[in-house]
Image (cartoon, rainbow over all chains, first blue to last red; front, top):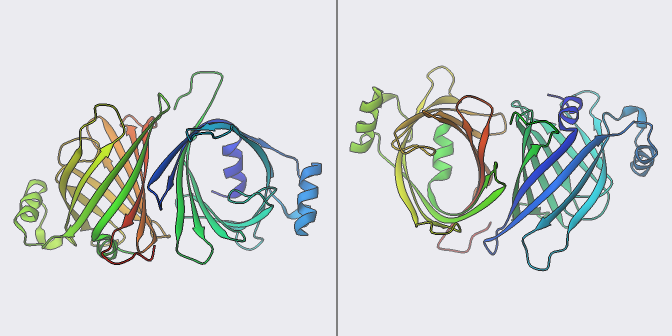
Amino acid sequence: MDIQDFVENSIGHWRSQRSAHHLAFGHFEAVQSEIDITSLSTEATEVIELCKIYNIDPQTVASPFRMSWEGQSDWEDSEAIKGNCVLIPVPDPVQPRRGKLLRERGYAEEVAAIGEYHFTDDGTFVLITAYDHVAAEEKIWFVNPNVRCRVSLIKTSAGTGLVTASFSSEIRQKSQESDM
Amino acid sequence: MDIQDFVENSIGHWRSQRSAHHLAFGHFEAVQSEIDITSLSTEATEVIELCKIYNIDPQTVASPFRMSWEGQSDWEDSEAIKGNCVLIPVPDPVQPRRGKLLRERGYAEEVAAIGEYHFTDDGTFVLITAYDHVAAEEKIWFVNPNVRCRVSLIKTSAGTGLVTASFSSEIRQKSQESDM
């Protein structure tokens, strides 16, 4: 599994169930959403622009994509969750299973962010992103071509403190009956 | 990471938050429980007995343990969840990061079960258990010495169909203040 395969396998329309565990208080949050992942050209304006911010040569990027999501949390007074984000992998020229991931907006904080990714030997995508105040660790793997799992951990950037652990199961939506 | 280290790191009293995603209906279930993991002697009666059922030489087992749990689901009319189970790892003599795991009771079905485990290169414990009607895949990893994550997937044994995906975050409980 390399980043090109991983992005290609991820392109599509997904229905997501996400559970967040807010650990200090033992709270559960349930989020249902629809996610669209679409590929972008390496020559798309938004790709060129994001590369410029990080001073990355657009020739070195692979399989940029856009993620859009729209959903609803079961927390009281929560507004509809809606957004979209450009993501650009930059594979390591020497170690193709590692690289950087540029994000237009971060997962843990609403600012542009750059993460470090690698694949484990069983094809799990692991992404570590350091923000100002916290660090995020995400693991994403395919159970089959139409089901992805995602575990996201938010830690205090000081180190070992875990604040939130969340889990998403994502099922590909098709016009015809799914073979999930 | 080998099975001896993994079991040793797991011994203790844990508070668990578990979210189950019942995928066909998009349902969420939240379970809060307390889990105790205690080591057993390879000479304990229950270990010898379980080895006998599977015709395993008790000399070949490593770090047998007992897991006890007690909790409550948020599903209507659900009774208190309570149980305990003897588990016995049998490492592969050639590949120490692989082996079999004997269970007194299964996770997916209430019968004795034997699973195949291995560790990935990032120290994740992966256990695959085939039952009569379904197959279970569990992944367990430590975020830090006092936090474990566990993802359990229940698939139709025919192959790729995913029925339930569940996620637990488990936090070690200590008498003194935790450094979690």
